[in-house]
Image (cartoon, rainbow, N blue to C red; front, top):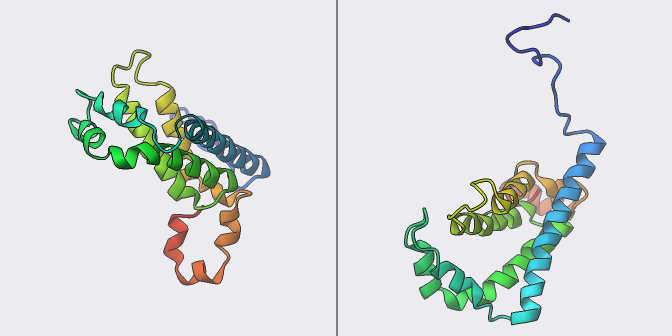
Amino acid sequence: MAYSETNPLAENFGFDIGGPLAAYWIALLRVITGWWFFHAGVTKLLTDGLNYTAGPGYLKGMTGTALGGLPVWMGNNLAWLIKPGVPLFEALIGLALIFGVLTRLAAFGGVFFMSLFWVGNAGFGHGVVNSDLMGLMLFMTVIVFAAGRYYGLDAIIEKTRFVKRHPRLRYLLG
């Protein structure tokens, strides 16, 4: 093998996603991310029930962010949905990730939440790279690597006749 000055890693670098260690790691990442969101949702349900008023309040305070007036409008006009929705959806997203069911759809919901959190903290007191961005990256990783296919129920669901007849459903699974 010859050394290449322009790209010394050209022939030596590779990430074998098919290996068992990678599969375990992706499954573990999915489960831990799921537990994080499940715990956040259940904690809100136990303390506030279906009346999580901090959600609309948080959105109302997002003035001057990159999203413009959209979050403020959501906080004012969609409070009826946000109060019960935030804890319920966090818990459901978490459960879906833990069990690997509709993983990509659930992770997309996590991306939506984390995008709002990241932009909502637009003061970026700790810089642009903060815990909200890291959470967003975790959910994106779950989507990109189809983490539900690794020791999740999506691997079983994808083998059903129904999914085989409707292959586009695989975009929500995995």
